[in-house]
Image 1 (cartoon, rainbow, N blue to C red):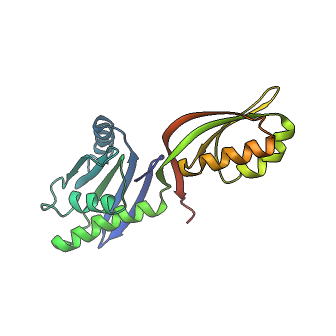
Image 2 (spheres, rainbow, N blue to C red; image 1 turned 60 degrees about the horizontal axis):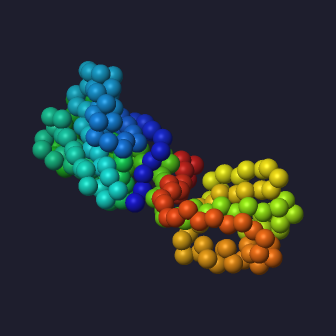
Length: 209
C-alpha cells in the first residue's frame, strides 16, 4: 500500500479547459471534507470541483463525486487511478474551468484520469512497510565497527551519552541475522532491545524522478 505525506498541485489544459488537481494526505473522512470545503471556497467560480478519496489500511473507505459532470466521467475515473496505483489515505480534487469546447463522455474520463495521473507523477510516493523496531546500545569503539552495517537500515534516532544508542527499523525477516552479527562484532557486549513490528512510510519515489 502507498500514500503521500505532502500535498501537491498540478495544472493541465485540455481543449481550452483548465484542470487543476490537488492531492492531499488525509487520514479521516473529516479531513477530506475540510479540504473539499477549502477548495470549493477557493474555486467558487469553477465549473466543477470533482473529487475522489481512499482512506484506511485496507482501502475500506472510498468515495467519489462527479460534481455535475455526466455520471461516472470524473470522480470515478479519478478514484480508479488512485486504486490502480495502490494508494490510500489520499484525496484528489480536480477543479475544472470550462474552456468552451465539449469533451464528450470519453474525453471527460480521459481528462480527469490524466489530470490525476499527471499530479501523481510529481508527488512523493511513500510505501507502507513492516519493520521491527530495535535499539542497539554499544560503546563508541564498537559503534565505529558496526556503523557500516547501518547504512542500508532505517535509523529512527541516535542518542549519544556515555554510550551510543541507535534506534532502528529493520525488515522483520532480517532482524535475527542482524542481531547475531552485532553480538559477534561486539563480543556479546551490545545491549539490544526489541519493541515489536510496526509500519513505516518509506519514500519510494520523489518528484525528481
